[in-house]
Image (cartoon, rainbow, N blue to C red; front, side, top):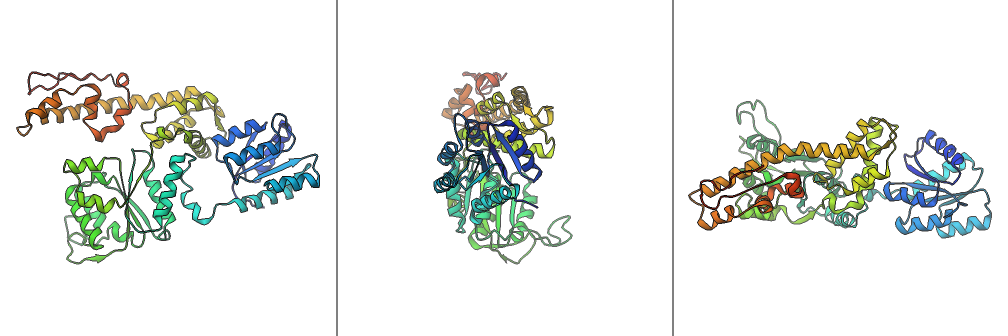
Length: 465
């Protein structure tokens, strides 16, 4: 008999019965996690996404009904099945009146238990209109409010601009909006506007006619046409070259696209969602991004918080990602040690969820134990920091060159030169808003020493260590 895949929490203070029931349910295809007390069960719920709880009634410290009451405080609607060797009809009636899904007497008939599990999962399954966000694992109030806004905006066709640091999951969020929209049966197509050179990006977006340029041996539809009826996601829109910004503005205004080398406009019906890690208002003041395009794209703005701003999600995400990595590589890996989870919670995560994924993949690859230690987590975190240092030096060196050019430029006014020469330390880093990820690193970690000469414009700084 096949069952709906689900992650079950079993709670019983009898280790033998707990192991036996766990093995039986695992053999039926369920994913199972166990706890030997109600208090431990609550800790599991706090760090893992569980679909159903099966608990013994009589336990020391916290019995099954007390556990049920605590669960309803933190996760209302979580289905709970109570097992007891001392059951009676009044007990069962009282339990179900309080909201317990099912009350079964030990020894439990396996078919009755499987049926109760299937019924509970069916009743508690999210409605179809809630499955749009199943790829987003969160319990953060910040994220839940943002998801509610996303669900509301999905019902219209207005353009959405998603802001957030690199690695926060902007594309997953855009996909969720598409899933919740009336366009969800049509294509969702994503492109990174900063990853391609200008001519190739133009061809990818708008298509081209045969002979439009060297190598264009046939007609090719662009992504606007490929996404017809659906959603086109323009990632890193802030990196789009200025000439293409003009063409994109025309497409948004006229709802028509003209392939390269063609003299024919093609009507399109596409919803646009864009995303950026850049501060576009500042980019507009520098003349790097068109103001009229910004207002076309930014009808609704959604800002995804950095992982450091929603630390309550780290245990949930870490365990979710651990299960995924273990299934692919090492099924015997089951959990993080308490100290390992504490280290994950205290890390700064400048790379956000993308960095968390990377760290967990490395931990799973290197572990030979079912429990990942804090030493492995520390090793993975340090490896990422070491790899960042050469890049940080290159970025600072590049920005220093820009600073020199600015100060030496004949267009630079005396106040401008004074402003650049007066910048030191953190002020120097703040001069470069597009590298805001650098600002998450402490001055000691960077070993940053910037000294500007206050006497000669031609040497505005003396060194960076």
